[in-house]
Amino acid sequence: MTSARFADYMKQDLQTFGMPLRLSFPPYPVVGMPVSVLQQYIEGNDPVTGKPLMQEVIDALTKPVTEEEKKGEFRIVSRPRLIKPDTEDNLRRLFLENGWTDGLPVILPTEERVAEMLKGTSHKPDEVVGEMSITDSEAGLEYTVEKVAAIAVMAGARPEHLPVILAIASTNETAFPSSTTSFGRMIVVNGPIRKELGMNSGVGALSPLNMTNSIIGRAWTLMTINFGNTRVGETFLGSQGNNLNYNNMCVAENEERSVWDPFHVQKGYKPGESIVSLFRGWSVLNSMGATNQRPAHEETVILLKAFCALLSAATLILDPLVAKNLKEMQCFDTKEKYSQWLSENVKIPAGQYWKADLIYAFVLPLAQQGIEPYATWYKLPDDALITPYNDPRNINIVVVGGETNALWKTTDFHYTTSASIDKWR
Image (cartoon, rainbow, N blue to C red; front, side, top):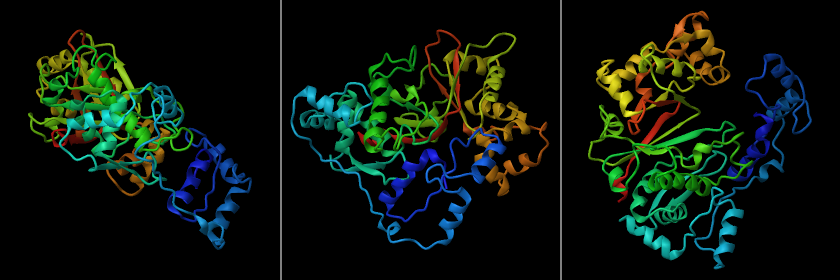
């Protein structure tokens, strides 16, 4: 049973997994609708089949599977290694019409260009790097070093960029999911490779003004489109989409100007290792800077309260001057101390927390299972204060910027995984 918005999407399961699924669909949308409307959904008809919804559910649970329902067959996505030769203009048009690009021009991945790109790694072209799908209704599409190299060519990369792109590919993470919510992503690179590739971690680091930052971030999107088999309206259903996905906020941490340990060291890696870390989330808030009346740590509390802490996680992207002020003026000697203080001091009323639709839908089941602290929070009166970012390890801090002004960004992005770049050299 799922909302009508996913009708065509869910029916693909019959082809993908060969399962005799019976599907019922209440109207869309569900999130944000009052209880009275949801009750009408239940008592009304399935908008896809036109049948009374609850009778349809009962029939699905009690009637025998028909011969027609047993005819589900697997659908495997496969593409030839090469396409027929043609003019450059025709091939660019072919790539665009087949949805193999992000809508922007790409460099055609000819055999010669891919061979040149493969010089950037010691790994064999036919070595499997991973598999990817933006939806669990389709099997993940397996890809090799050669296929990743082809994507790197399309993005405009050079051979020296390939190890970073391979490391991202090895995580099997997509740059965007199939959800109706329009998620964003972020890439943070740490270690010596930042300087080797000339990545920008200072002035304008998140702007589209650095080749390496732009290309690596774009390559992740192109991998997701091609390996994740992304099709708008079929497998990708983001209601508005997210322009962050063009290069996924790809940036290097400014380790040289930071007063704290680099992000990858916090995650257990050595300072001399080159590591790429991936984040995903919903929103980004930009601070206009702290004042004498309200210093940076207090301003951050206000920003974090503005987020629906569904995942109880956030990432702070701090200008080096902000980090320096927090350490010297506010006595936060480490990132961990600052995260701990925020975890203890960001508080909201329990009623405000539980009345958020997504919290109620996704976190309430945890509370009902007795999982803490949610089980305790759910029993509190509405005016009792809770700490939604209860685990300080989920408040991540990255130092980025050029010390031209004490600005910073607060996102509800949460850290997902890291991968070694050195492994893919």
